[in-house]
Image (cartoon, rainbow, N blue to C red; front, side, top):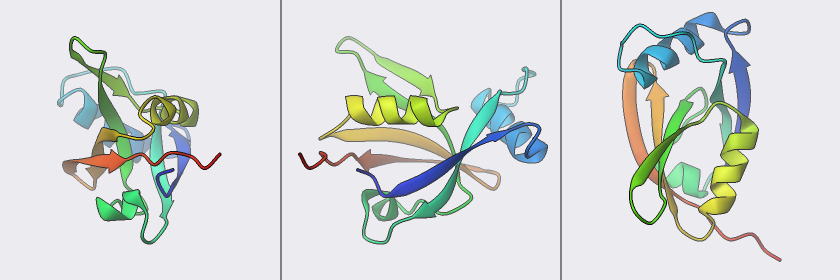
Length: 116
């Protein structure tokens, strides 16, 4: 649907990545570490993920969805959460916030409909 493969990374697995993601998500406020983050393992060439220039090692932080009345932010901390949000956005765009090094980036990921 999007052309990315991700992995869940816990603070035990990679404390520096989780610490940077926590600071970025909470705007450098003091906060308890996120339980896990999603790190991009690979990006398929020619995919929607490649079109917005996602790269291996990027960390997916959050997404914004509209519930019809307002926009809501959702933290991306598990593959299950990502799959659920991709299904909800199927056939449209999903705005995502990405941490690359020390930069926060955002883009709209075109979520393709699955072949039936």
